[in-house]
Image (cartoon, rainbow, N blue to C red; front, side, top):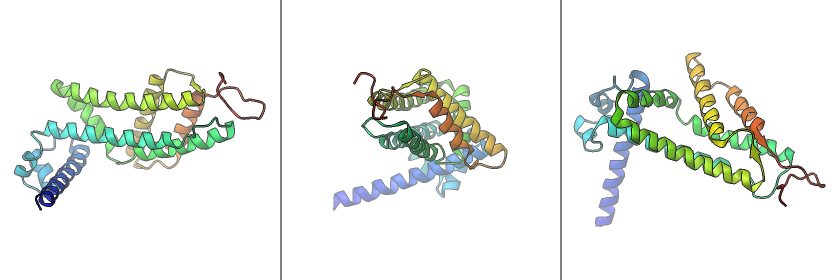
Length: 225
């Protein structure tokens, strides 16, 4: 009985936190982090100021939770994208399909929330104006990026493939491309941006991936096999 009550309370608390986070994300995109007050966030979520402070010590703590959750979402999306790559060596023809699948999943990850690209910029500005927020933001983004790079490096190694540029530069390039494309689409009044976003990302990935030489059967394999 105690366990059931505890689980119910925990579930309700999580729902409250989720609603506060969703409301804050909307308001941050609309008014900026500085412009959105705790009272407005609470009201948008349907709660009182007291409910906010029973879940978060401050607006900065809420910002950190937003960054942490988004980092987890992107990591999970990256894992799912990399999971579609087969362990066995692949042909050049299969590479095209694999890239398309990976980009499709990454597309979902980068567009989980139309507001995110705006909120991300707001979080960076907030960190610029509040030095105490910087270390946590930098650490969370670095950890997510490092895990993504490790997973991608492992996938490339399985196939004996390599990149034309260092992997950290690739991640930075893809991130910058996605962010700029989405910002331009929002400014143009087209947040979805059709297929150009995905097509551009596919071309970037295809341009930097180098496969090992084909063997006599036409399959692409590791150069050391």
